[in-house]
Image 1 (cartoon, helix red, strand yellow):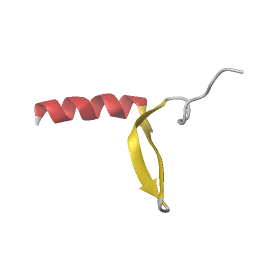
Image 2: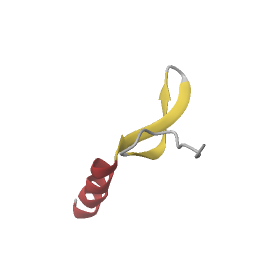
Image 3: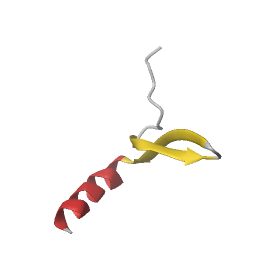
Length: 43
């Protein structure tokens, strides 16, 4: 079996977040993560 990451297909991990007092992977859609990088650079 291939090793799976913490996120679903089409999602990428962007750090960690707290959920119910536990740290869990912060998974965001892959397309959205690219847009947020551009938005930060532009303004």
